[in-house]
Image (cartoon, rainbow, N blue to C red):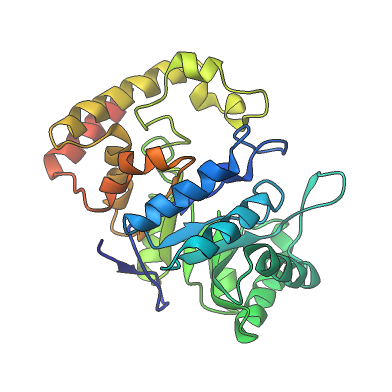
Length: 317
């Protein structure tokens, strides 16, 4: 699998990486419902076996559980993937999530992530959200301190806008930005992605299949059966009238992919990767069986005609 340099770093990453959000399991504010840990580990192993060389997680996913599962998977892998994780979302004994960019909090969070992942250094450490906004400078300064201390190799941001990245760049270089980006979420196209391209900030987009909507495996019946703690129940894209339109788009992707022996999800991921600013895409995986349905996107290229066909379908929605 070909690799791409991530921003200003020496990290050469494959076009897709394993997203470990759902691996956090159920019982927290942004859960995807319950998840079998054995399935999670098997998914990571299968993806790495296919050539994927990075895993993206966050401390808050499952309130630490996702990091622990990634750490367990690492022990079984002879070829260790890069490990990316995030800070800024914190929680207490009541399991309520709070936001902190205070220096001491970020240092504590990093140490906790190192323990849960059971690694000596984190390959890419990211600020999860720029919140509270007034503490962005303090938080980014703390990230630079962690890099200088050797606890993390590279530092990045997630969900930042251009103004916030400009503020951070006055303190230390930004290796990468992690924004939401898919056919259904395109707010970063006009300003944020061009800024990253100009300033050599790598982009690893999340939710290229819009939380599974464009995977080809989603149906109205499946949405109705989402467990109560699946956060997707609250998203307008999973509710009518948008749900029917989005599932129709997934069928359009199925038709395009069928010409190449590709799944709808692979078409959706390849679409995001076609943007020249995007270095890689985070692809959520919950079982080894899902890997074959997405891994082909790493090498699949949509033609100009197919990209135009998708754009026309989006414009007609």
